[in-house]
Amino acid sequence: MAEAGAGRDPARQAELAARLAGVRERVAAACAAVGRQPGELTLVAVSKTRPASDVALLRDLGLGDFGENKDQEARAKAAEVPDVRWHVVGRLQSGKARSVVAYADVVHSLDRPRLAHALSDAAERAGRTLEALVQVSLDGDPERGGAVHADVPALADLVAELSGLRLGGVMAVAPLGADPRTAFARLAEIAQELLRQHPDARTVSAGMSGDLEDAVAEGATCLRVGSALFGPRPPLLR
Ligand SMILES: *Cc1c(COP(=O)(O)O)cnc(C)c1O
Figure 1 (cartoon, rainbow, N blue to C red):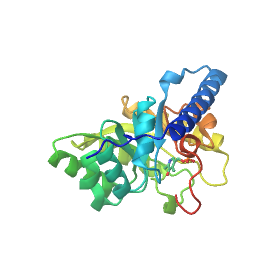
Figure 2: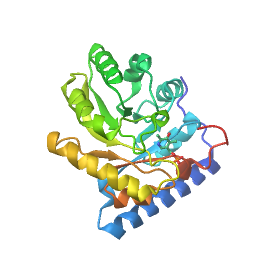
Figure 3: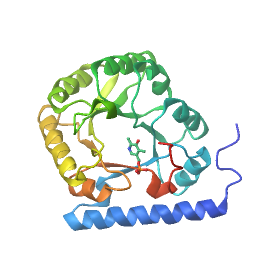
């Protein structure tokens, strides 16, 4: 297979470099405002709808973490650019567990026991351990995924017990129309509760292109950034 990004486009490379620098400046300023260090944060480039060539260009610019929200698209891109860490950030059907285990390092969207069992079984069969974050629903809207707050402790305990999974922490998306800072403050409280039972589950995945400053201010350790890095996605495509 041809290396993705071979025959690279210098104009696209320059655009991605400028966008990456802009995102890094935003992260640095947000950290400075609250006395944090940018090194405390992992930047996951959410490459959904973008070609593998863009992933290869950003990898060459120094990024090592990429996120996707659809299994089929993720699997294809991971096959083209295998030498980075792949994060699944979208809603996941249990039936995709075997596929996901073949390429993903971290699943951010674990939100129900059945999915936890499916991922753990698939990981065990593949002889590996998958990192999983419990996705928290901050508005209780089941359509958008995530476990409601009351269900988080038991789900986290289950993930910690299953031998194919390692509990990494929590993830959330700010509810539509809500103040993201307030939403991420709630997530931070839930993350603190989790840490009392699971002291190694330190990841707090929060913050996207539009609200990464709020996430940094509320203690996020992982930002999932798409359009600020790649440019606006075409309308109607998530
Ligand atoms: C698309 C997506 C992102 C990135 O969104 P942008 O606004 O493009 O930065 C982050 N998290 C999830 C779960 C997503 O689906």
